[in-house]
Length: 536
Image 1 (cartoon, rainbow, N blue to C red):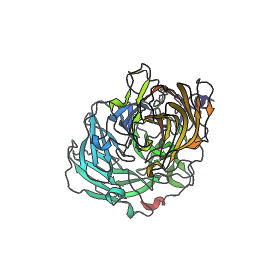
Image 2 (cartoon, rainbow, N blue to C red; image 1 turned 60 degrees about the vertical axis):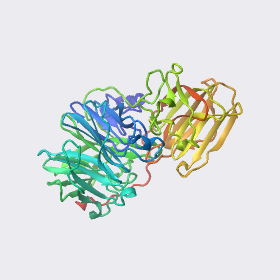
Image 3 (cartoon, rainbow, N blue to C red; image 1 turned 120 degrees about the horizontal axis):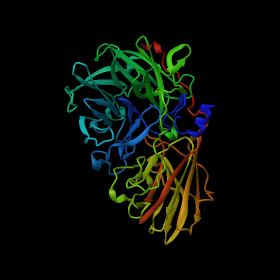
Image 4 (tube, rainbow, N blue to C red; image 1 turned 180 degrees about the horizontal axis):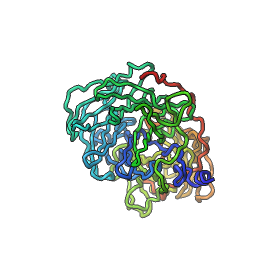
């Protein structure tokens, strides 16, 4: 009964105070998560691609409930490269560590190389990114400072830029991460040496129990699995074992994340699940040891490979606040809520929180469609099912302007206002295949005389999005057929606000109401068996 009441009250958190937590612990697109513990606090960062600010910073006291506390990267570098949207580029899978009294994030840009940034305080300020290893296609870095004072960096390769992949390379590194100490590095793990292995990437390097361990995902984000490699020497040779796969669970592609140990000594593993329009959502799995091999997740009968658990005993005993990353914003604070990110490096003159007290003012910009608009204000989808409502004032829009509420991905749809020849029209528009240069199409329209308007999107399972509008904020009228949200370039769909053309849009608030989630569905499609665990 306690678990049921907890689920009803806190369906969009993992249920503080309950004997068990429920996966996912973050039903939002915190892709490629890496996490550590320092003292009694847990810290996490994730990929952020072309969004600015980048490198989200999250904190937790119980490993289950996470608070978004900032970003390590205010603007992407170099600044001029990211003045316009660079979909799918920018910040790929980072590694987070604490060493020598400070926090370190190593992150890759697949077109530039590996960067390093540090901070004494996790919440910042963080140092300007230092380009440690220049080059194309060098991705997914992870450092290790060994007991003898030597330091190393392991990384993977992106075939789209480097022409190679499925291998992991080890480099010798100066302990202060100022430079590398070799020219080429050494391939220490070749996925081609293991039957059925492809798309080996995302390595995390650890030392424990007399071994060097490399935790690395294999097989791709949708249908892959988690492998671990071990050796008594950091340069190998390495044995391999599959430690977690989908099995009979509903969690597809369970891989790429972080091994974290509690203060009490229990072991846990964070990973993501690729969930279509919702992006790569974060799960937490128990981890145990068998013959000095980790087994992640719950037991999979007849198999030494674990499978993802839907729920499990709380990792840290006690009662904790049911915190979660924010979604709503009333724009009453001197800064935007931490959930907001721009579509490219932002400029101060794109918006104002002071021009009209209690409102966000979005100034119009001039690209040909929303796919190319840097000044869209976006955030992650916060749950599987939710309703978003925003109140807007249209009086600042100039002739030729359009503005409103958007569900944004490689297909996108928006509900808002177009103003032409002094006449405002309510419009529902969409663009299917934005990445290939589609033209926006008007799906529905209606005359509009009101100066203020409430716009709403109701999102159901699978990203099914119904738009509606209201002149009084009480009675909402659906418009058009439901739109099915889609992924962006390496990211989930995002929602937000835009103003394009002359003038500006004033936004009174952005309210998100999460709906109690149903039991996990079998959304994930077919179950694929990984290569047999006898590969070690």
